[in-house]
Length: 431
Image (cartoon, rainbow, N blue to C red; front, side, top):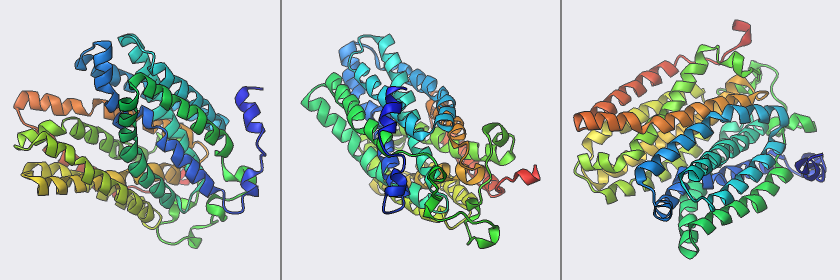
């Protein structure tokens, strides 16, 4: 018996049954904590380390950027593997394994001495943090919530926006200032081993049906007639990944949701330069992240509520149109007021799309093979984020303006929004 198996079996298997309230709330808290603890592998935290790493190792910005992109791509390509393991072995065991490896990887980052070691470190923290830990945490929440899944993921997304993106970068900078970057990575690694590892092993649980419980704490409806508007996804039909990718709606959803990672990364990567072309300062560009984060947090919560009451295709279409509006609005950037409006629109589109992207897959393809499906989708999203800045840079270098790529991207977003209105929940009976 492995160490993780011994630790796991030391906890009574009936913990979900002994809890005086629906155990899904514990799952929501533990899963959200897991999503927050992906912070050491997220760009918003790693970016704080970059200047210190460059100075210490004596490497150029171009090299460290290349290593980070390569590490992100390689880490992203492993996510289908991790997704299959979640389906095979369960979220609880995988949360323990991933937390253990992620903690060790962060400690390893404190010992890197050259570019090759840095590349390996980037691969590990992107694969295990930004990728796998987020994947297993998101999956376990979705396993326990069905009819109120939007609400659950909305709460989780709100907390992640406020605590993860809001607090983690500041915490990392404070630790580096108090100690130094290598020690900070060690502290983050120990936090994963001492906090996330026990949370994963003690509180993560697989499907509620394994404990004679129901998702949301109530039995699933047996027919469409028992549902209210917007709850069609509560009727579950489980698909394998190989079955899902053969459906037309799967690829509409993939392209639609991945466009936010692709375009969002492209915009943020070149944000200072985009503002400069409009005659605006770098300081103003940096300040845009405040309205973006506020709008993203609030719209994530709102999107969660709407996802439980309205067809998901309308939310996806709305978020894509909002994305198009934000891209078009770059043309009219002229000062702090328009910059705030731009940030609010962009943040709102990102928040709603984030909720849709987490809710739609279990809603349309069931929970039985959710890890495999999430792993495949996450890999595509990470690849999109990795290559997103390229077309913006290429167009600007060739034409001296971002407007052509912004306009084309906006038009594509609108077309994807219109296409998403044709989405219907797939049924094996109609295949």
